[in-house]
Length: 63
Image (cartoon, rainbow, N blue to C red; front, top):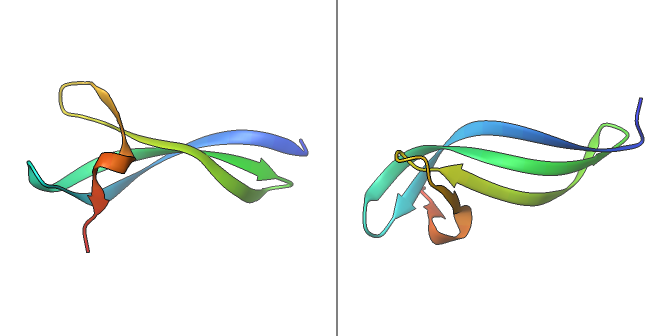
């Protein structure tokens, strides 16, 4: 078992964009783990319908 490793996971989230409104998208998280416990999220991004990669900072979580 490795002490420190990086893992990429994907999950579906509901987001809100001012231009498009409510948006259900797949968000990819890149996290750093230490002994199987997550330390911090290094980066999170989403892929658009057209294949572009966008940062999640331009969309807010939809509540």
